[in-house]
Length: 358
Image (cartoon, rainbow, N blue to C red; front, side, top):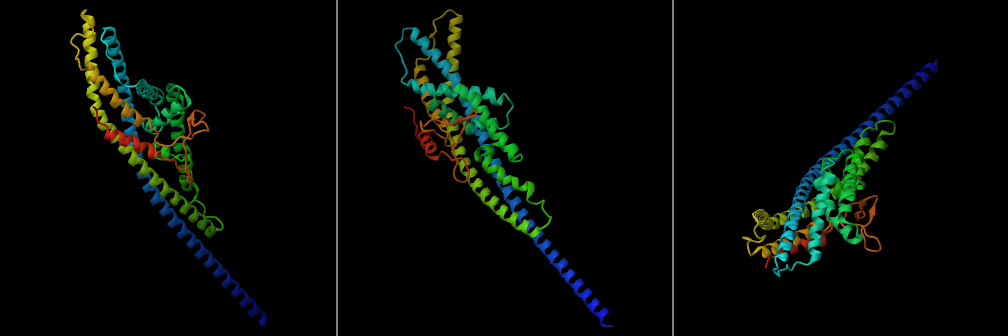
């Protein structure tokens, strides 16, 4: 008669064991859910913060690129008119020449060509954040042209388009459509993509070994947050230089614009002289040479700043810029972040700030 009690006791024990297992399972699942929820909140909070910094940096890059492209176009107008006036002065028998070195004028002409080609190739193709692309890659293109001897028209066309498309494509495809493309250009797809890839898989796994998976995800999120902190600092530092460059260029360009307007008025007067059968230089201000000199001096200062790479380009053993598949390569640090060209930028900023026309 004791056997039924033994069986009953065993059943009770089994039920108790099963109940404990179920409770333990519930506790484990609950703990896993808590870990996942905390990790997700931590990630999303940091991601939102990084997005704000990225968008702000991208806006300033777009603003700088738009200004630089405008300056390049106006340099083209200034140089075309200035050279025409100088030729006419020379033909008139006046022994007058300017003191600006030819190599400085060549740099100005190259920037003008670069801006024109870039506008036609990239902006004409409807690329988003195209002006931001010029702010990032304009200086690198100029450096590459100078170091490799490749005509800047070729670089500003194909290489500019490829570089910008690589940055925008890498930012939008590999990174899952990360806001404006300017930040992706600054950070590079190698940094952006791993950060944002977590959101695609980290919070979907609630299968077996939930606690182990949650702990793994927590570790992955911690690594991503660390990377986002580095990315955020990098974006902020880049933005600081972008703002400084923009402010200096605005200041210099305000001084330059009146010189361009004088040349445009002079060109109109000379065309009127031609139409009326008068001498080319009749009624032309005698200070026009000084105007041309000062305009070129300012243009040279702005050109040297604009064509200083924002980030350090990769160099081969001949100290030439490395171009792979039409894309100019940029140096990255141990964290995969593009290296800001701080020393060279600061040098040109100081020169521009301290420049005084004689």
